[in-house]
Image (cartoon, rainbow, N blue to C red; front, top):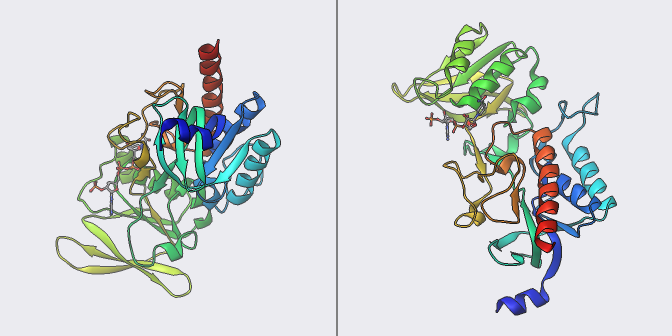
Length: 316
Ligand code: NAP
């Protein structure tokens, strides 16, 4: 199909937003309020990773916390209230170099004068057979989100990078005991984390070890680990497991167009501008230091503002 005929049947917007998490929904809110025609393309339901959190206590404005689904629905409703559209659609391919930019999806073709990439990042899973079944029921990927449920309990943290170390430290201030399981004999995490962890009296380590199995009745009761050097297996009773082995940004469809860093996050500074004019990256998908809902919504606001300025300059 020629570019001309594609454009004829496509739906045209000032801004197409890829991803309906906090960054995408905030970009939609700001852009719609600025008078842009906006559509948010979201694969599942509104909220992205945020919708998976049972309780969010660190988003300002909710003194008793709020559950992720409700906060997601509120953010979506607010964007819709100002005229943004949301569409459940799977993005199949993107052409960010063309003018307008073309997004092909399971629900048709969308063209945008500007595009905000807010596709997020998903936590890496261990790949254990029953991992999916215990998500949110003893198995977690975010200590900052779910650690508070383990006050006075025993938890296992899996991983050896900065995230695992930061999670273990945070949990050591909440849980009675933290057992960090790492597949190497040393942490990859920075010194400042290592020293703090070594000094924490309630943190134990299992080096050269991998988690082989989740132990459970109805609820999770522990993990079985294997020492990679001796081959010996050990059962560790615990109340919760926090998997902290890195994240995978959702950038597969963007490779070859947007500049990505070594970990495949989109390279964009605080302005959210990418290497392609008119394309902005917001939220967890952007290469940055702190990935939280508050930093995602901040990115979304900045991206909408920058897109507005960019379009105003171009269209004079
Ligand atoms: P990361 O640095 O990639 O570390 C992932 C860790 O998980 C590694 O120790 C790795 O083991 C382990 N791992 C990976 N796959 C595994 C598997 N299948 N089973 C068991 N273990 C596995 O990821 P991250 O810690 O999430 O950090 C991501 C980025 O955010 C990094 O650039 C980090 O510096 C940054 N960050 C910074 C801070 C900060 O305060 N400065 C805090 C958090 C994150 P190996 O060591 O064997 O590869």
